[in-house]
Image (cartoon, rainbow over all chains, first blue to last red; front, side, top):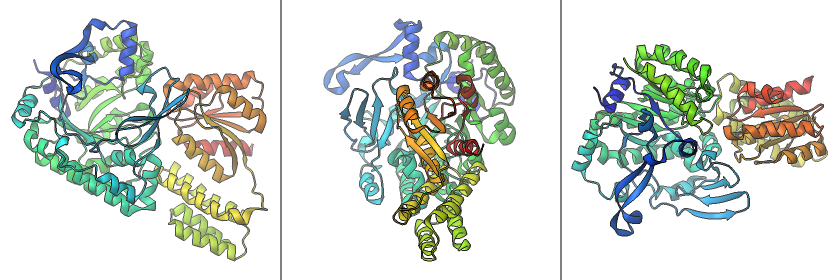
Length: 390
Length: 213
């Protein structure tokens, strides 16, 4: 019998595993709701040994680490064993409360953005903050911010970094894929400037955009270099976070992608491929179809989550792109959460046909939302498992 | 005279530089073209082209946002010359993100486009109580109420707002438009709204059509 990692690796390389890997990710708030709805609290994960209180106590303490909902339901975690290279600003901005009213709280975040959170909402992070100000606005603020993006800052690697120990960890990990994760060129810029400003700058100040994106290529490669050169093909895939599209389509046109992004994508994916990391999974919500040809040319060969509400359809993509793209997700979370025939129709319409062709890992088309009840998820889990055996 | 208006429309439609568009605007004013004609036959025509290219899949969010900033710069430049001139008003829109939702990127894009196209927009902001929408409707008697929501968890607030508007008896001639990432088209009819749209350009096009009837 194969391990979960071997199954995942087979699927993303278009080989048939013994069991098709079913992949889900969950909002923490959903799991909290499910604990209230009957998920057994005695299965909450406790890490046995950790230096106490974040390292402020020279002693060993147990630490609560949440609920392993993937293991409980038998689905794969998308993020298995992650390579620990820190791509954040160094030093971090100090998280602090800036303003507070009866309805809102405004914070300075660790990336330097200002975020407003509703205090009246039922959920916590699920309700997502509204970012109201960003640290990079123009050339001057970019040059200032760049000082915090030194790829050679020793804090980018874990305190316990030990190449041999990490090699062993990545070799022995079998509960899912091993992975390297970082922001892509759109994701990084939109995080630092905000979506409206970043998008307009391609027209207002193209030189600044070239400068930022070129630096991000250098920063990304140099930050991950040590880990990539150490672990090489023990890393099963790279997870490339972009979120560069909405329901209408990509946020940038193919022309802008070609001019500003394509060469830098190629150099990063080329660096990974040179070290044996040949699978690159892009995470972008929304409709990415108009950019797919260019993304494939850029070295991206996987897509998640393929949101149905944005017109993404894994069956159509498989027909059009064949083995040039492995696909993850694409089961409409809204239909799945309805349960019954709606859920069964959604699974039946995609999973059997894609299973036959291969290169597909079934799952919801984004994180499992709070509206998805525990009872309905159990029903969905029982149903989809009928399809997983080859 | 016509040429310079076409040049302005073309500059916006092609997404030329702000400097170039401003030069054309200065030329139009120096030729004695009235500001209202510049807005109607130059600026708004150019913006219309951008909207069409967006719907056709030639332009994307970057292009839409840049066109908006370009038009805004031109309208600011025209303001002093327009002090005694009235532009044709396409209609009145009351707009806001519903209670419990504090996101406004999509709403702001719609507001910018509607405003530039000639609608009078009363933007109530984010996290707006149903009663606040009702009060504003009573005050400004809009043609359209635009409700925005990013989060699926706040869809119930759209329903609550539509119900509050109906209960308050201010629904008679009012059209209700739903927008935002959480919206599916069929949701609009399920809660008694008139239309649900996938993006700001589609929303604006629907408002235009409603005003023509």
